[in-house]
Length: 137
Image 1 (cartoon, rainbow, N blue to C red):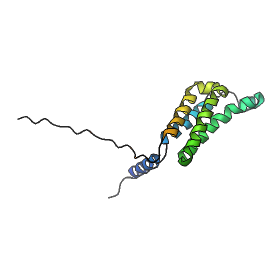
Image 2 (cartoon, rainbow, N blue to C red):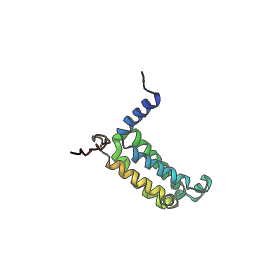
Image 3 (cartoon, rainbow, N blue to C red):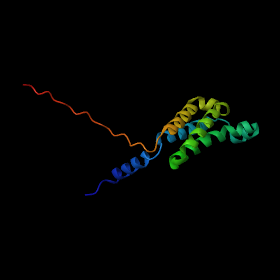
């Protein structure tokens, strides 16, 4: 009897996720998306403002790109995480205070998680406590 396809896909995803700093990369992507979504001015207005306006779109796009690179190329995670922190902090000045601090915090926390991830650690396993029943004499 074969397993259901959803279980097979779920276990394959868990194996893929265990080999990379998944949560850090995801938070970095979400931070970039949040900063991009809080931008209210159109691209024409931003181009008219000048380099400051272009940086308002460029830095969050780099956050998204760095998060995706972390997920799909974890071997270069240290470079991507340091760059991610610097870009996330740069959105504070260029993009509505870093997406009203939410995108900035997501990007910095995600980059720190990526920086601290070690590839040679074994994945955590859930341990269940054994219930010890008292034996009455």
